[in-house]
Length: 443
Ligand SMILES: Cc1cc2nc3c(=O)[nH]c(=O)nc-3n(C[C@H](O)[C@H](O)[C@H](O)COP(=O)(O)OP(=O)(O)OC[C@H]3O[C@@H](n4cnc5c(N)ncnc54)[C@H](O)[C@@H]3O)c2cc1C
Image (tube, rainbow, N blue to C red; front, side, top):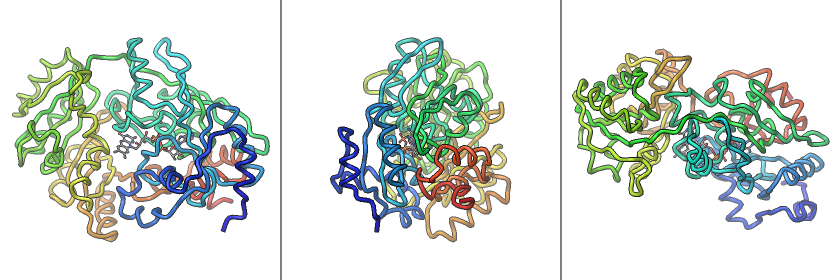
């Protein structure tokens, strides 16, 4: 039972917006953790004591000071679309909802400076007017915040060109509020931003980001179907390696996954696999030639900006899992770096329909590689772990989405620099308690 008197805290917060309604507090204490049956069991009952919604940096500093003075756990939240219980408070306290901080300060020379709580779709709409777009967006871009993406995401649409969020050059500068005895605002530049990039909000409250942009294209959404999955995968690798064809998304789905895409059913055939693509308008003829080489068939092609566009983005990355679970809630997923198509084929043959292959192509270390967000027909935890182990023993790297511990997910190791930084900015270990193993084991 918490000894903190929250009425006293509410009084101290003064005019800063708060939410105390129990149902809303519960809603704003959760994310999409339930895609994992393992996390569902562990996190369903977790809840904050209070939601606080700051509108500017002064208010963030004030909340930080109150949390330090009263040793209140603080969990930062963007839109709460994270998948691993990243913004679920394990020990109650304050959830700091950043969505009121949504200003776009400037867009110039291929960069933008924005507040952390702005939605990525809003930023992209603004930058496109200037001829630029975001280098990468998650499939949740319509609601997810830019601070939440850098705090908890990894990559997405655009990763085929720019790699992952943590790759050098993908974040120029951030402002971060600390939870020291006297909270202050730090500015981190270049490599220094690694301390907060994909740190699950354990290392300071990001209030502002300066991000590099990409030249904007007129994008077309394209669906290509293939009778055989490996043809689809080989086509996708060839497209990923074709430097002359401008693309933003290469997403491949082995049959029967396309059957979960109800809204796309007019363009898909039972038993076939498909590729969902975003390519530039002026690359469509070259794409058609490549499609022919692999016996594929273009069944849909539409300008992404058209009003009734199907917006294929929202069927890719983890939206694929979302659609599949709408039909079969027993389905869960894995996140895998296959590195080669040989590895993909091996797993395809080994697991068949139990682990349905969904690939997203991205650049890694200068090469285009297939990464997987496979759909798993879940039976029990033991079997899930067996599947993970088989992948890892056979050279496919799993970023485990069934844990809320930072280092047990994608990283696999404790980063001494990040721990050192945490000791400075959060000396009382108040931020997103229980998520950073390095802190738990060293404090
Ligand atoms: C259907 C679906 C599809 C998805 N597709 C993708 C995808 O394509 N690519 C991808 O990378 N992810 C994907 N995700 C995960 C998630 O949507 C993204 O990572 C998203 O960008 C998170 O943004 P958010 O605002 O919802 O962050 P939240 O979920 O609110 O927060 C994520 C993490 O960042 C921290 N955080 C949030 N704001 C701040 C801040 N201002 N300062 C410090 N820490 C902060 C939180 O504490 C938390 O640990 C998907 C999830 C779902 C459910």
